[in-house]
Amino acid sequence: MAKRFWPVREYHANLLKEETGWVRKEPGGRLNVALLYPNTYQVGLANLGLAVIYDMLNQRADTLCERAFLPDRAGLKIQQKAKAPLLTLESCRPLDEFDLILASISFENDYPNLVRMLEMAGLDPWAEKRNGPPVIAGGVAMMLNPEPLALLMDGFLLGEAEVILDPFIQALEEAPTESREELLLHLSKNAPGFYAPMFYTPLYHPDGRLKAFTPSQGLPERIKAPKYTGPAKGMAQSVFQSKGPELADMKLLEVGRGCGHGCRFCAAGHIYRPPRLGHADDFMEPALEAAKNGDKIGLVCAAASDLEGIDHLASEVIRLGGKISVSSLRADRLGDDLVRALAQSRHQTVALAPEAGSPRLRRIINKHLTEEDLAGGVEKLIQGGVPNIRLYFMVGLPEETEEDITEMIGLIKRIRQQVVSLSRARGYLGRVTISMNAFIPKPWTPFQWQPMAPLKTVKKRMNRVKKELAGMPNLKIVADVPKYAELQAVLSRGDRRLAPLLLTLAKDPNPQRAFAALDLDPGFYADRKRMEDELFPWDFVDHKITKSYLLAEAKRAEQEKQSPDCNPAKCTRCGVCGHEKA
Ligand code: SF4
Image (cartoon, helix red, strand yellow):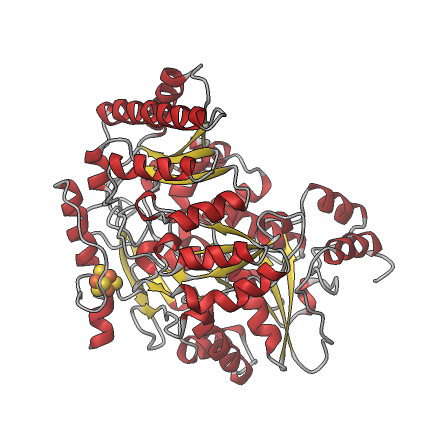
């Protein structure tokens, strides 16, 4: 076999030559796990979820873990020429030689890639028909709503890897192996956060809405998704580093999980509750270690600029010769030292996310950000030496009108003018880049009942912004492709009836052709306003957050009222911290 697949081996060897952090163990006498990332090596290498699972499994003496990525264009050509199935990166073994296949999935639009990978591995994508190792999926997209993959996976791990992976491996090692059903039942009963769709039966109303979701075999109606409660320094860090792939040249440190600001569109801000933000001191040691080698340190968290002591940490990294990068910055939380460190790390552009152009819409989404905050952040960045600014906006937000778009255009003009004036005074002309994304209603957010704005409206409004700002110097506008946003909207709130769509997309990624071929109305999933008492396909996952809280927040959004930030010491509003106390 080694000879037969040598071009693939050579291709993998060249990737591994540039990479640090990978492990290769002898397969004998231990559980062999193939870990799939449903996108290319370039996209997935820096994924922290993948790194945590790989590291935890390879730390165990009784387990071995190797990765498999979706081959990129060059890799696919080599694989096809060698007539090879999908092979793991480390030992170039086919997936059916492993005892278990895990998939780590962060993004809905990667689901068809997972189907492609199973097919490339020679495995049937339908769980019911598949022989070979069990295929279990986890990751944030699964925690939100695993149902679109329910007929394709044998099971799911719902929760955070730090607390569910070891008990799962232990339960797997003790499980009966006579039949797949017995194995999955044992895991369902003994591994926290484990969900096997075969034991849960959905029933639908004639109009297609979910009517009931019934467990069998004495399993619970809802499955708790356990969360990590240990020290902040125990959160994720990058394991692999390499020069080429996106973000993989950085030492990534997860400095917090979740976010307490309660933006109503943000799923991470809801399922990762309570927010667990460390202190900069927790990360000083690994950050300074990397800085001494001249590395770039990436601080990762949905609310990274909230990290107490971040200015000191950033200054220390620079002092020792490193560089710093921060995954998300709030315009109203920018310290001078942090900005200086970003500039000294040669960031040409720093991004801020007003998300909506009008104060009214920002209240509706609970953004807690005024135009003064935004302008203050922009001024701090330009004066601190960051040359250019990127601003993120969403189009198609709930309650959005043409007037909000007019206000967005006005805001962009004012910020552009501000950047040009401030940068001119510093002897150059700064640039503003606008990133427009379609709003996608996500499960577990107060907007989970909302329709996505019709594609036509999203396109029209994006085009209006582009047209009215066309030709303006020092301003660039980039917009996502609405048809892929619609697909994401379908998949994020979809159910198990979408399996044929995923199989079709695995062959041809064009969503509109796939909807037409299957006579599937994307509007049922994407553009439909849900009834208040509608049962959702993801309701059976228990993140502790109550549906009544989400609905109350949805009503506050309608009333254009903001809600306060999280305060876990005192607040029991959403049910998460109340649960802890109970
Ligand atoms: S109970 Fe309050 S503080 Fe705790 S996660 Fe929910 S909103 Fe935040």
